[in-house]
Length: 522
Image 1 (cartoon, rainbow, N blue to C red):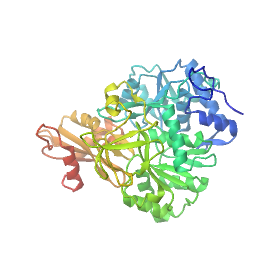
Image 2: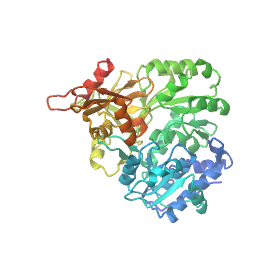
Image 3: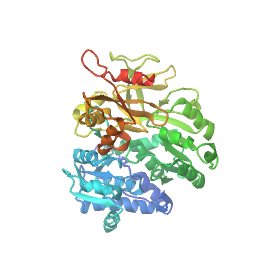
Image 4: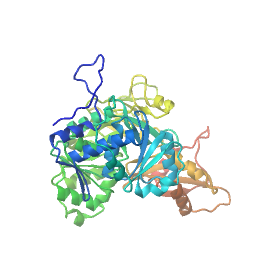
């Protein structure tokens, strides 16, 4: 009842050495409890024996039918479905990392990710097939439609465990994240970084034993969404996948299935409490051991609501990034003691705050946040300049966040050095939206900013200067954006002004726009 992954002799390494791969924990769980249900979604269930069988069929089919090899890339364009986890695990087990395409993007955005990642194969859900077929890909040679021909393709492959020699720092997936340019950048994530993240989560949250039962609600294409869905089955537990977020369905699942842990982004809490006391009282959440919030800051008032309804001792608020992985965690006992705080570093994570002159900031002094840990990403795909800007020579990583440490070493995120907006837990880079709007014939200038929002964490707002003689209204620009941008990137508000504020060098003063928006003067 064990699995053997063939290994090659490794000079200079002890006989005990073996690389940590993303699928290995699931294989070990299969050896222990092959008939235990690992994953479920609606009326579908996979045991550990079935899911490992499917992992291996993906690997074999990718090798022999799709002709993928170590170092090649594929792309995965799908909503929250069980097949998502097996495709990532199966492809990465032969060294063919999939680029993650968000399910709600437009054909233009999907084309960019597939072409930039040089994906040779696209696995696409049937709900996105029409858009996929309309794209002229530069490198995609084969499209496999999940829900149409995927299952037949899978069953034709033999369930043979792959023998491709891999190192733990080889890439297992490529989520795309906004950064310092208008287009998103591919983050090369290693097996090692995420396996170590699983162990870190296990020690910190105390809810990933074989007896624990999780609910996966966040988008699987997102770095955190995938990690919090995969960790439960890596350790031999159970995970139920919700195809989409539905607050009442979520509460019913917790009650009926006696789930022990859930991962949320702040927007989810707002929608849960919007149900009202009567609906909330219908469901018991006493089985919960842990609630984890990530991807955007929780307002203190929301924390108080969470503690008041679900009870103390449950809520963890974490800080991290796709690039840096898990960085800090504010544990339950500190939720109401440390306001607007994201906690202490995880085991193995180092943090420092540097002033503009490069010197260490003092207690409560704001500076740029740097982290160093084995949980970080390898590099940006085909972007040496951006990678060099992110990493120092000593391995310290920055994603441009500004923060401060208090006298006890607790971290507070104050602002972002760059202008990225986090709305509903998803990163949005304003320049991409600005470039779209700038092409509209009625728009002379535009600046896109993020403003505080009680539901979304931040809302995307476009500040527009019309061309002389133009009278276009907000709904016209909104419809224009909807044609070319994913829904979550479309500004929730359009403000028209006569001129954008600029400094002496002509640079648009976005901080001034944000400050004016906060006090209602925009």
